[in-house]
Length: 129
Image 1 (spheres, rainbow, N blue to C red):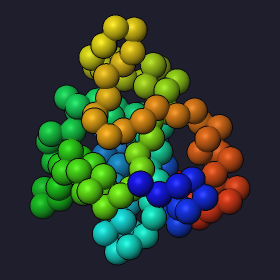
Image 2 (tube, one colour):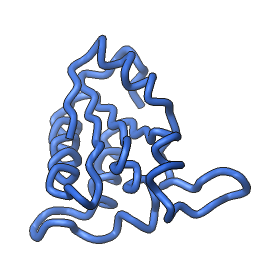
Image 3 (tube, rainbow, N blue to C red):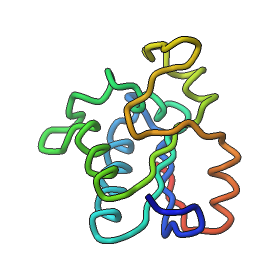
Image 4 (spheres, rainbow, N blue to C red):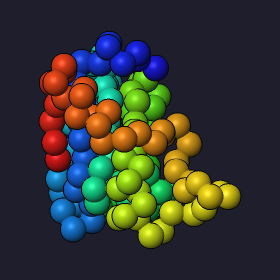
């Protein structure tokens, strides 16, 4: 996995099911960057945090596109880092399973604060979907 200062691009996905086209485009763009050799970090925020829940990623949102689960797997296999806004997960995602007092997210993803993405945006290219 790339070190913080080594990322080429940050892709913030703030769109969820209400704007699934943008969410799918964000994941597809992140995969294209990562599989082309780019060092990518994806930050799931606002309604996009829903895609960190294992149960929410198994259906293709657009015909002929991959499922969010497959996009996530591609990203992780390519060495991308995927972060989830912890506050957004709390506020926007009622479907998360709980493990003790912690929300369960897809394996390989990490919780992070919005300030992490904001500070990073000052240093590297950032796209928002």
